[in-house]
Structure formats: C-alpha cells, structure tokens
Length: 152
Image (cartoon, rainbow, N blue to C red; front, side):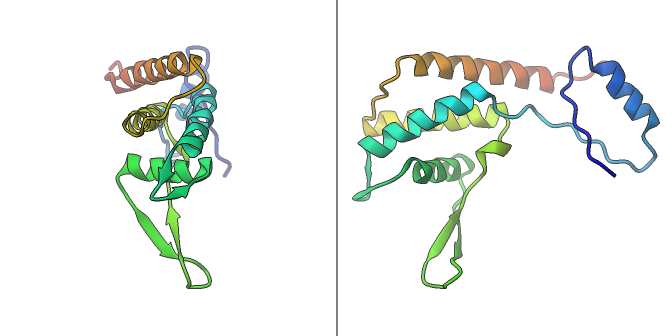
C-alpha cells in the first residue's frame, strides 16, 4: 500500500477524517510534528560557514558540513562512531537535519548560537538574528498547538 501524508489544515480536516473513516482495521496512522521550515534551513548554512571560517577546532579548520555533524551530535548528546569500510579510521554518525521537526531545528540553531558566542564567532548577516527569532517563535507556536489536548 502507498503512504499518504497530509499537512493538517482546516481545509484538509474533512478529507483526513474521511480517509480515517475508510481505513481498514489494523492500518497504522501516525501523527508527526511539522518538519523544519525553509527559513530555518536557510539560516543554518551561513551560521555553519561563519564557524568554519572563524573557529579552529583542536587546531583544525573544519568545513560547514563538519560543523553540522558536530552540532547535530551535540544537540542529541550522542556521539556514535563506527569503523570505516577500510578499517583504518572512524565515521561519526549524526542526525539528519532534514528529518528534524521545527522545534528540534530551533534547538539546533540555539545550540549553534550558544557555541558561537562562547567561541567569539560573529555573524555577518544582521538579519540572521531576526530570522532566528522568527523561526524559533514559529516552532514554539507549532509545538504549543501540537501539545494541546485534542477536542473530545
């Protein structure tokens, strides 16, 4: 059977209810928080790029992708390493930001800002602070909506 995905809106609620009413017994239904926004994703890469230019990490200059791996591992407080295919090194396994919810992505951006402040990183884009605030407020509003009890 195919997978169907809906974004819950007032317009879509009747269609979603109809699908649910027709669903066979045993069908699995999942509800998930909204994924990150485009604005959140656009904010991430300038922040990581600034860190790659301004921070020496244990004597190394890291790429924005390297910083993304470090930050996502720090967000989840996990450090998973596996041997590489040749057995002569290790690969760090990180969380995919494309699978993050708005709230998780906001936490990631806040973690990056906290780390950057500690390391003395400055960001060129003045609007980054505004984008961060908007993305964080949007994620918190969404989380508040999700955590409310559904009407009985």
